[in-house]
Length: 188
Image 1 (cartoon, rainbow, N blue to C red):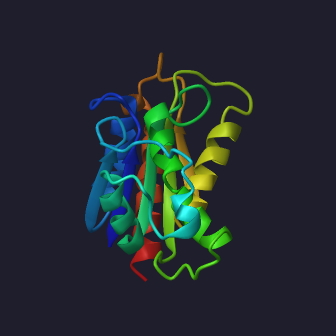
Image 2 (cartoon, rainbow, N blue to C red; image 1 turned 90 degrees about the horizontal axis):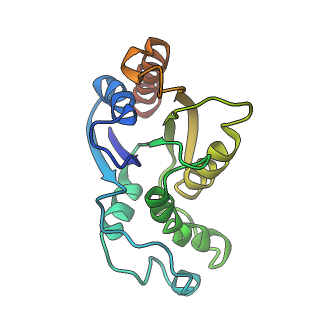
Image 3 (tube, rainbow, N blue to C red; image 1 turned 30 degrees about the vertical axis):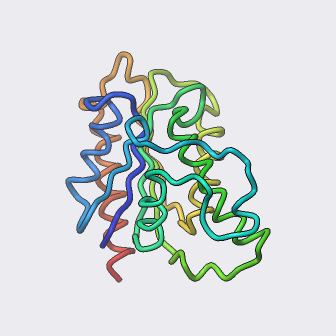
């Protein structure tokens, strides 16, 4: 089993990392982590290259990510909530998934290069308010869809400003559960 993780926190020792680590403890197989803050991945520049050809005109670390997307079995998106959605660097990375959308909708090519996979979302946020997950879920739904990934669930560790993720056993257990479920689905 191969899992691709998009890590969206600006900190290496964060609430998001604690939640992700709970998942990784349960996850089987190989894991590739794309640290969106450290990766040399530029945002889409809307050049329309992918309207006519497979891939992307920008040659950076995303080329390696594309290759892993095509072979992995699972995708985990782990991010703190910034302005109601994923962090800016993570959104920059996700804009580069446009090449898959173009393949399907503009060039109308078979999607055989991307095998179906399963995914999960892990989010941390300092606050808690009504409908706070709507924008987040909508954004990651686009990312999962572009990667041919069926999202099996989400885990939120909320109010981390006063209730640290490492103390939030309910969120940690849900994170572990999602990882075990990914194992089950991907190892069939």
